[in-house]
Image (cartoon, rainbow, N blue to C red; front, top):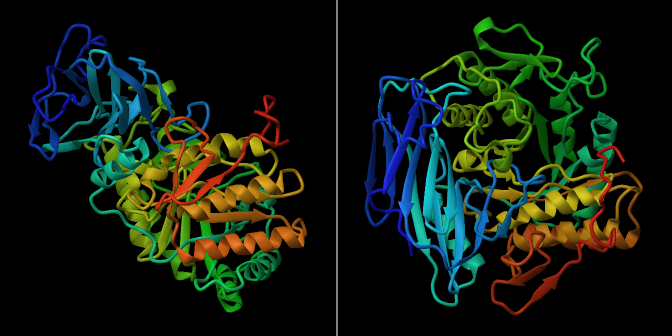
Length: 534
């Protein structure tokens, strides 16, 4: 095994004063220290006389026998870049961690969760590169004190150990202190049938239906109210989806909504977008003006206090779970941080932050912490967030890009592919692969399989169910699935992990039971013509 727990063979680093092609010239203007032991290696970066941007560490070794390489994504998974095993490709960006198969053994390399940089690996036949993005938005970071940018860890699997089993062991090594839900999370979220067209009355009807579908469950299910409850449609702002976080005329009082859900016997969840507002805010707390409102600067104390206060207000209304959304696109300008598209420039598109002394990674972590402080002990789902930075702060992470209540192809490409992150489930956080959507536009059978897969594997198990769309037989199967999720066992693993980027075969931990799903049956393969609205 090529080990990274030793001195790098070459180090290049760039500050704002460094020439653009610093790698070609082998330049390093970043003061750093690489402290390694048998347990791991810390990359410590020091103030360097100019704001710091990048640090590249090269470890040489013969990897010509490597057969397959696995890479993850910066945040939510989904097209245009799959989570997948491929052949060796030197230029491929492998965010946070990577797995290699060579001569029947699996080797894993990664940085621990909660890093203060964006870190990626590159694998080629001559060695491994670790690249750290230490930027502050589009600028370098003006460090004022030493920064432990990340901690590198590695693991070599045993002879005969499956790649999935090695990945699951390595996941626990990358995350020292995960925060996990105290009870299984299952129930409904109303986004993928209503798409924001919801009301107090519709939520009450959904809750009644949910309780019928979860009859016999020991734990209470969740009724999650997604986007559409707030004062969303503002004259002159188009279809604005931000704050202020007050109920619109269709709800009137969100305390009443939470209380009514509780009275019926379910738990209540609520969606919000912490960085977009149309309220009056200090000029220096404005990051951009777009999406019909003001994007708040997550590095500014005002924003952190507001994110805390908004989360606390929603929690104080009585909601048991909060789901925050859009922080990646609002903070960085990228809809999704896609490794193949953005390479080293992945942490901000146009953003210049108020606080120049912190990296983008640190700024995002501080935002997540502020939201969780406001939520208190209640579960928080991070959506359009960076999972490797969120682990250890929130208990649930939306691991994939959006599915769809209009085309199952979106669900196959995003919801099924993101299950390649199953080794991280309950090692980093409880993984949420999004909702099984039941409408008259998508296959109910395929979504029933999707929902069952979530329950079998112990992931968050949520459905979006349009009114009056289910048959009695389908309702009975959903009840069986929710009862499976309720027991919290979730011991199934992926059996075709290194062979299929849309896992179809799942095996129980004892190896005695195999469950197979066919995700291609709906369109007899893959649907080529895709439109989100159709």
